[in-house]
Length: 113
Image: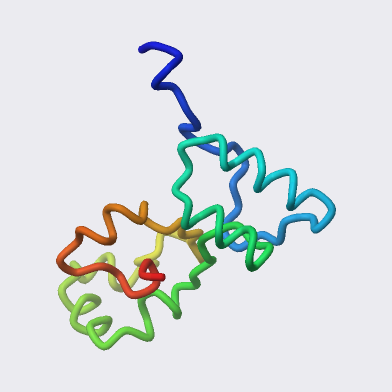
């Protein structure tokens, strides 16, 4: 791969919804504009001062959904009676890349800006 096509592939220690230090926000936004990070992500950081994404609890993402009971009932009994979450209490969600969301036939509502 040539250096010409290289760009930001991942951000280490990325925490969705984390507040960016206001004293460092302008420099971060300026730096990110020189990367391949989608402009929609950079705009969210610039406007809200937070990293794109959110933290989702089991209730938020699963238990409050209309399909939850059916999903739970389809699990094998042994798994239903144990912890179907395997100990997880919450998950961090980074939004799908904006181009994929725009082209998706059924985008997740939280991913649409």
